[in-house]
Image (cartoon, rainbow, N blue to C red; front, top):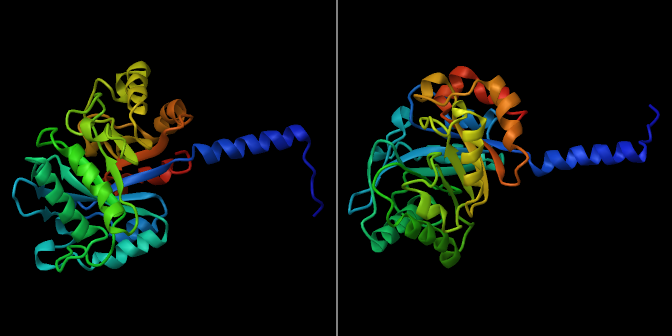
Length: 298
């Protein structure tokens, strides 16, 4: 087949489109582990839909409590039953998917009583899930890529200390860098995560634009963009639009996939801080196929 030579104008236009797609190409993050009946971790990563998988949650920690992980019926960490996930985690990582562990959640027992308490929690997370060593690593030998802060209880104190301690762990002890992410509510600033995010140490912030009627898209374009622009101002890496993957996944804030791709994403995709979309959660995404519909538009 004969090759076709592009005119200078065609070449510039083609390169511009390619550059724009490269600069602002986003990805999808999804929470996994909180519902019975969702796809396995291996299947989740094998779908090709996600760049980030967030394991949820370590729901109990701090204030002298023994930390506890809850992954619903996927496995029982108390009996060592979650160590088998190590191979799945490593398989995800070989695909280029970042796997993070979320601490907190909307239903748990957690909090930090002091800077020293934060250091102890950081050391626990480092030794049991990240680059450290422990005889009782709940997820086996796999080294997770980072820690996600989904702080919805327990006040706003000392989360900044925990962020600094986690980032210092990889500097002081070697190994790969610890990624940090946070999942604040869209009202700005966030009551719990705000102080930690202001440290400038967070690589990703997936803002929950749901269950918060004043700032989610249903409040109108102006209110939504006002909230988004405020979140763009934080000293963090990439900002993600957090959404429920179905109407059943949240009380308010669901955006039909067609509206998301045609009306919402065009408003924010040009931002240099735009990172993509975060979905709650894999269980609901399995039932709607939401990520499959939007992935080529994110």
